[in-house]
Amino acid sequence: MGTRRYGLLILLLLLSLTGWSQVNRYMVYLNNKAGTPYTISAPEQFLATRSIERRQKQGIAITEGDLPVNPAYVSQLVTNGATVLYTSRWMNGVLIQCDASQVSVIEGLSIVDSVALAAPNEKPSATGRHKGARHTSGRVESVVNQFQLGMLGLDYMHTGGYTGSGILIAALDDGFQGVNTITPFQSLFSANRVDMVNSFDYVHKQTDVFLFDDHGTEVLSVMAAFEDGVYEGGAHDASFVLFVTEDVTTEYRIEEYNWLIAAERADSLGVDIIHTSLGYYAFDDASMNYAQSDMDGGTAVLRRRRRTPPPGDGGGGECRKRRCAALADHYRARRW
View 1 (spheres, rainbow, N blue to C red):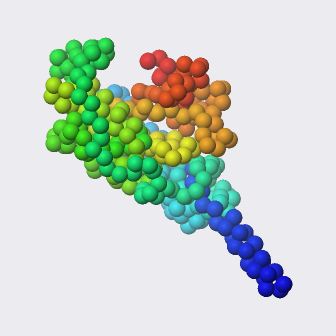
View 2 (tube, helix red, strand yellow):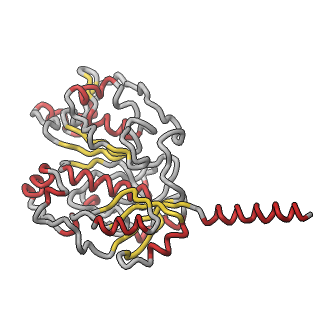
């Protein structure tokens, strides 16, 4: 009997320890950017030349909101048990993962304004998590899309020489499976028009964007694919930088934060267009859901900054149900 009681106590202790060791992902919002080593008078420290030139051309001022998070504040979070995933200039925040028991400690720091749960559990592994997590030869549909181009007036634009040359487009999606192997995309690589240095998977924090899902592949094909006499993408001479922001296995607000970080990176590179066929409304954790009253263009994490991305209203046609998903609810998006 004594041995059984001893074993039960050990089991209860282990269960207790397991409960306290739950690691989740959080967004830590900071109070200020005081003491930052960056200044708006030296934007070349955090913005590419192309980004600075784009702002000058469009009359967009560089403000304190563009300054990176104070590195000293980031170090303080690490000292207090946080593993830093990414930082956000525009929201002055740090996306972290840490033991749930450390949240109260972090919330108590003088530099912290608030802490929000982004997703349960740690950052997912890049291997063995997604169905189809492999390179693929993809599907090539041998269908001339002249009718589609004509509907949008792109045939006239192409005739006039407007095929995207000189334009840099950031594509944010759930993966670009097979883009590096499918024939109609090969002109992108032969002409060095995919920025492989800056393309990134923000879900798994790694550089291979040609994995996981093909929604991004399909969306990219509408813009970038080209096979002479077979298919012409709408901007098949443009250059692209590819960002994975969607975790296809779960739905949590961390996807919005991933989107935010990728959009900031796109801005810092000086992209001309952010293309994002994505929307956010309901999540696996119902407490994260947006109400219709939240769809006012300013409540969601994805508040627009410095450009209007072509929005998506959700695969279910949420806007047709009079229930727009963020970021299609933004007032500038509604004006399109």
